[in-house]
Each structure stands twice: as structure tokens, then as C-alpha cells.
Length: 180
Image 1: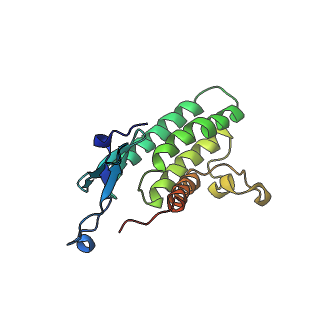
Image 2: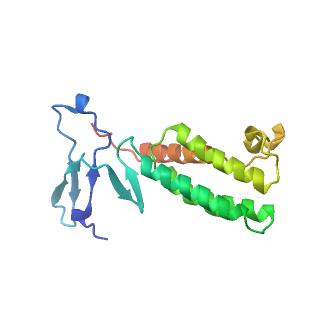
Image 3: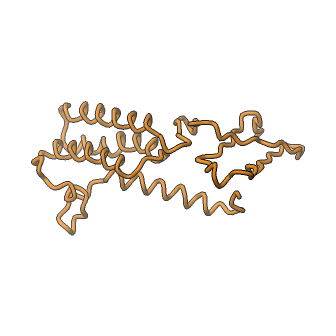
């Protein structure tokens, strides 16, 4: 395996100009097969970067990914609810296809929790439609455990936050010194 060192990108995300003033960014050294060092410069001017096929914002102004997710959820759920299929089939499709597609992008986004809750509302409306529940059916009962008389459906915002926490814990458990 040989790393294309020229393609390595190091990004400073949300570098605080006030606290970082007068400090040089940390150095990232990559070594080739002959152990020759090559420094990768940090770039703090990028507003987004591509990671595993997804544009990830490097600032807290991540509007595009939210709009993409909102449009995708709306379009896919509208398409699904208008089709002739059993409610079990539709629910399985949401859990196996739609949720993972949206979660892939949303778990890497830097939105406030309120944005995730807006997407929850789209899923809640679809769940009510598919399960032929009254639109006044309490949203919390959709997601509550069965022992509390809930339907125990997957809540989008909970899944996204769990994926974010999982990523943070994996990064923390990799070991090594934190960048200073």
C-alpha cells in the first residue's frame, strides 16, 4: 500500500482566531516507504471538504447538507407512502434504506439539535401515515419503548447523535497525544 502524499489534506476546523493568534498550527508529518518525512500543510481556509463521498462543512454554517437531507427525506417518504405495499414492507424500507442513506450524511454534519428534530417530524408524519394512525397521535409514543405503551420506532435524531458519539469515542480510543 502506498499513500499518495500529495492527496493528503489536513484541515483546521473552526480554528478560533482569538486563541490561535500567535500560535503556529501543529505539524503533520507523513513518512514514505524509505521513512523520508514529508510535512502536510494545514488549511484553515476551506469551508468544506469531501470525506467518503460526502461534503463535510468545516464551519458551523452547514446549510447545504441540511437542505439536501430535508429534500431527500421529503421526496423519499412521499414516494414511499404513495405506493401500494404493506405497512410492514414500508417500515422495513424506511429502516433499511431511507434512514441509513440520510444518517450517512447527517451523522457527519454540524447542525444544531433543532435541525435533527425537524427531520424527526418528517419521519413521524410518515410513520403515522403508514401505520394509519391519527395525525394527533403523540410523537413520543411512536418512539417510546413497548413497556411504556410505545411503538419503539427508530428516532432519526437519536440514531444520528449515537453515530456522532460513536465516532467521537472511536477517535478518543485510538490513543496518541491530542493535537495542541
